[in-house]
Image 1 (tube, rainbow, N blue to C red):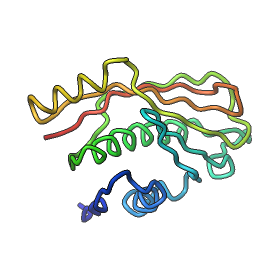
Image 2 (cartoon, one colour):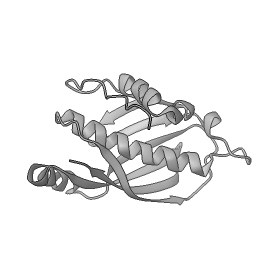
Image 3 (cartoon, helix red, strand yellow):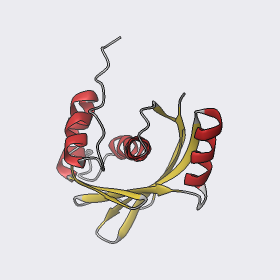
Length: 159
């Protein structure tokens, strides 16, 4: 087992570039994804991704990379949301699915947000009551305005 790289101390609103730098070191595969320009907009996490780093043999986005990136985006959403509330708990994906709707042919952007309107409230209640919980998140991949992929994941916050 490899040694765990601890998260940097959280502050009033994470510095997303510092978080992304830590992520590249903690999960070496992330350095190869071409992720840049992270942004947090209320309940939605966004980032941009370079296609060149994620090509398949057809010259379009590699489905395995897209699946990994959407899974990672949900993990980051949950981790950053916890950090904003002063909680340092482990997050894992418990279940996930993807739908590929159109080929990814250019640099692309992704967004992640709760699937259910009351998802955040239910997670907060579960954390307060049990010290653990789950949230269902949606991740979308766009080339310009074209929705190319939609993924959903259930993320577990461990005690």
